[in-house]
Length: 108
Image (cartoon, rainbow, N blue to C red; front, top):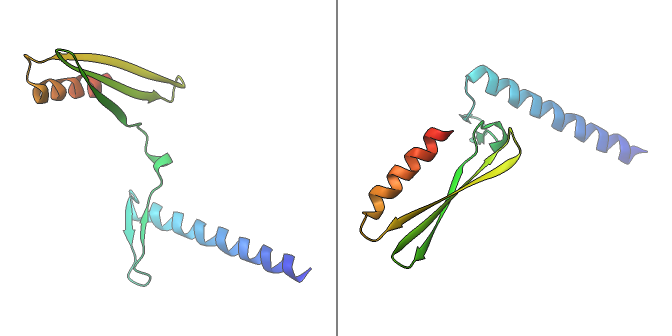
């Protein structure tokens, strides 16, 4: 049974250290990056704390221009929203992509 006592003590210590780290993050404010002088370790908040989902896009070469597909996960409705844009060769690609990204960001 000594192995169980050691295992249990180890798990309790880990849980206590995690709770202390959370308290430190709460006291420092946002808690995105916290560097301590003793350990020189950097703590970064996990991605599940970030409230927004990233916008992903892919570009495909098409005859006469580009097809640009935007994907975004909507956690409220639990679905993936996909939008497809077509940019022809006559339009400036960089400017068109900037406008499309702006429109997608405003939809959020």
